[in-house]
Length: 491
Image (cartoon, rainbow, N blue to C red; front, side):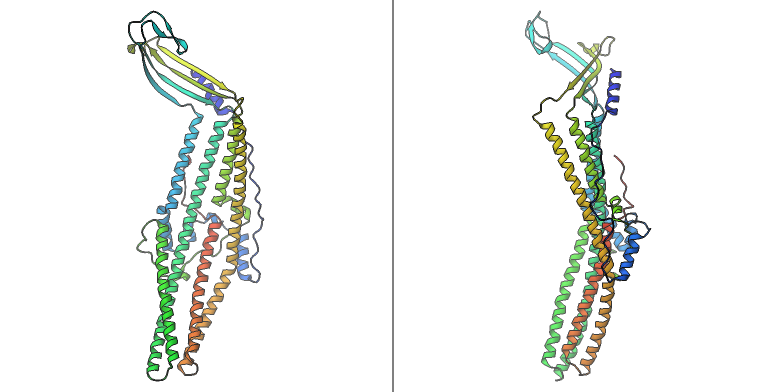
């Protein structure tokens, strides 16, 4: 019995597999990133240096190295612990590991101990015979008793054609895919928290600009009201000043609402209360994020984008399922056996001569299944083709995301510089217009127009600074985002 079980295990572990040979599909993407927009020599040179540099890739740069601001780091760390999406991704890992271990256990026979007592009582002259029928024999005075204690396994399949090992391989690849999905989720959480925090800072900056503009306009209104009372300013000047103050007050209420909503959005991403030390008091210029990220060639992102790696693991799992579907066309061998002791008396168990064992091999050859096996194989092949398309789509989306972020990297710096110059020029124009109005050279309409231009330029500058920083966050995420602090034990 032991020798037979040993042979069965050996055959199961060294059997063949019918999985097709896996070859990674060739990505239908260009081997070079798109060139930066023409006319931007400075940013274009930065992008070219980044794409052709020999520095570490973005996937090798941990998020703490990229997001240097301590407050942002505190928010990201909080979110990685409590964000619902991150928690669900972690739980999916645990579930996938358990499913893999359940499937892996099918390679080995399930051995269990059993103890049986069987009591039978039949009418006089009737006792059971082999095969479950009954016949007439000599009568027995009382019930029949039978005791059995032993170890055994039931319906253990010899994996000669790799069906079970193919299913096991598929589960393993699905587990590895969940690992990459978890990493992708964590990178997304990091990027979402950073983007929400930057938006909070930008709206806070717009709120401060609006407060300063309102204070300036309120002072102008007070002066014009005094001049109107003295008969110097006109009623038109007074009403124009009151209009600008009312407009600024409306803008102030709007930005106060947006700042409150931005803070609420950050709290939702954290999945926990806002840390007390985190505020939105600093300016966007104080955010020291990396400005140059090495990107390499498009093919390199295949080795670092977790969503692409997860898609490939799912594709390999589908390839393994084809092997399992093919194995269904071949014979299957099931083994059932037990070893123990049996007796008609409870006291006779474990006595000399009470040894009992059974061994029941069964072979099954599929002859007619109504086309179910053929349909199962066709389904497995179709599912693999679907995942090939999804894998290609993941690569194409990744290349587009990186290309879009590189286009932003090549232009947003120049836009920030241009808007900064515009703010400086508009500020000087407002100062000169105010002097001309105070000196009686121009009417108040010129001051209003200059102040409106300055306010708009200040808002545009904040928006462009926010877009530049968020574009860096997007580029970091699109390049596979470094994840140094994540590790997961193998199943």
